[in-house]
Image: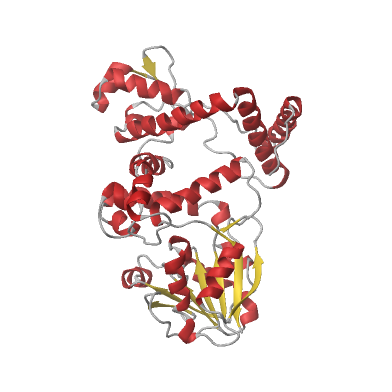
Length: 427
């Protein structure tokens, strides 16, 4: 992307006009408040269209203004040290459960809080005072601490506690050892047990072996994934809207690696004539078929079933469509290719491979808040699995390289979905 010289006044005007649009939007939603006290909104209200566009414009313009007037050299130092100490302070706060000992209303003095947490008062004050510069906690007086809406969200059982602790306590050692892993196992390793996770924590298994070895860590990671899946962009309704399932008539769809059947249910409900089979590991199939944990609604049992299958092994069940949603995401090209190639024995002309997954843009990068988050999550994939987000051309190369009979068909991004659906047909 070509560099331009942003105009400070134009950026400020964007902030002003966007703020007016947002303020009008909030007025139509009961005058909900954007603030930092404990009675404020914990997150921005769900919005689409102009309000969401204004929100993105405001965030991007405000960040650009800040970076411009800070300057490149000061920014390099500031972001480096503050990002580092953000992780450090949040890890301290979550590890010692500081939010749990601060009253939801009112305040507590530092000495009493330190005693409750079992920590040193001086170190507690150091960590909290840095966090306060990010509006996590506040000081009603120089000797007392009270909650903000941000710190209140970190109490045990509240939405963000597990996710923030996962990222700052469990993932921080991975980040610290990413370069060590590369130097030990080589640049571009395709092996799932040669990652920053393996270097930081030891063990010869992959990421999920690491997760399952510690029930507390497993809960933190699981809660983080649940938080992501609850976002509108991750709704299973998008599965229904991204592909014409009814065009398959009374055909069969196999949801490969479909967990307990959330996507399969969405597909079966969208196309009343379809038969849907979910293939999974034995323990997942057992959970899916248990009445206590089943997600299959009454009336779908005759068209939706579960089957034990290792997707690295040759496919034995014929189907019109083999569907993968965020399954290949967690595997490097080497192993994703093997998974796709394992379908080959069952494939016939006209069969389809339908994938719902992240597709990375191959356009020049822009310094937007959305892009920054996307690229950060892309780097998380490197930490966990030695993976990356793929561009559409890389997806095409992966699939056709695994079986040359596949021909790219089309891509559809359902409105509001974070994941497009794209298909290949067997010729």
